[in-house]
Image (cartoon, rainbow, N blue to C red; front, side):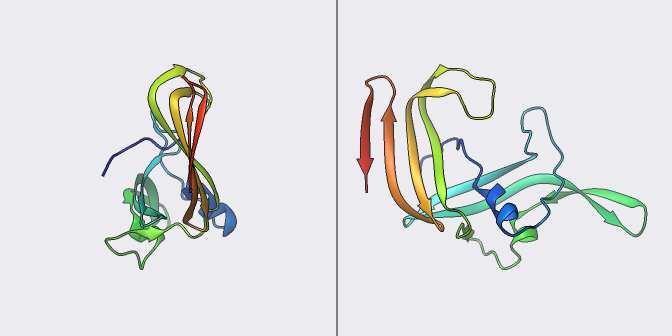
Length: 141
């Protein structure tokens, strides 16, 4: 039930692994990806709940229209429960607490604590919490 920022982009792997062209999302000053994906860890699975961004659709030959990109546009069979991220294997990073070090480069900033979750084909394998203040490591299986 808690909400956190995610310092990883698991959706990018979807397009990469399937050799699909990534939609041309409208980039904004606060979001250079052009979309916000909402994820949930549910029943030890990584679930993509929603995608929110704008893309330009072409109609006829020359007419273009900006439309909202949604989860259904990417996964037509997606229900209200979202989609298990079975395409993703890797680590996701969740910053916790105050920022200790700011780095203006993607997700290189450091925080008091950081949760690193290892995912294998959409399933949670391991959760590790790094305590950067007390320099401790807590591993959960």
